[in-house]
Length: 259
Image (cartoon, rainbow, N blue to C red; front, side):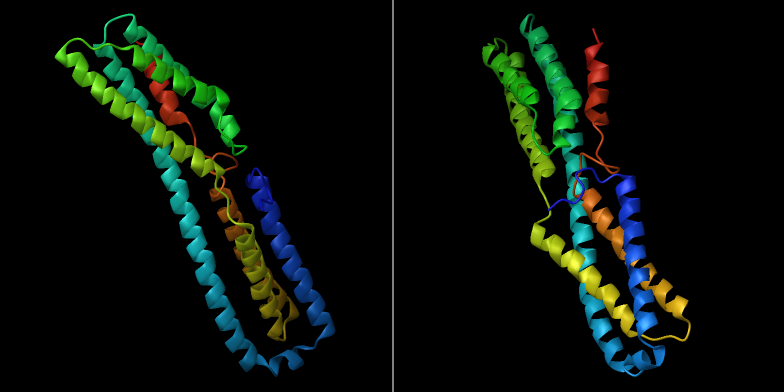
């Protein structure tokens, strides 16, 4: 269940403001209907229950935030590794004679361009690029045609096969990262826990009505911002925290115009 396909800063501001607004409105309504002296009578029980609920929810929220952040970093690492493999393959291709060298180099650059210019856009929609997939297959078609003759060419050919297989594995990992989602039941638990945590703050009574209301709003705003952060990190190729294709684009910039 994705509430925002593109979790940008406006989405985050909306979630943050909505969380505070709903919490403040709810607290204000409660204080209008219930006198603070009535709420103070149950402070001991409410405090015990709130401590249990807040600890459980804080652990859950912190754990999920760490998990999605680690997944986001892993995806960044896949992008870096993919750029390294393409660069290595371009360098290894230099050992082969023309026209194989030229053909292999063109296919590698074509693949890199397809990933940067097309697949990055399709990954924002959580799907792979048909153009990039075809470009990757064309690299293999070119490699199949290579007939290494010298020992030097055979050594580089073997290494190129290994790196091309690694490139395919890294690409699959990157695509898997863009397609992964936080389960709907987990979102229900996160949002339900947020509602319960904020609702428990209404059970405490203070003489100053606005200090009570603002405290509830502050807690709701913090939770709302954390939920937005989880949402943004779970969409690695879209929104305000999207991963950039710059590592691969830099490799193409170097090799595309090199002699």
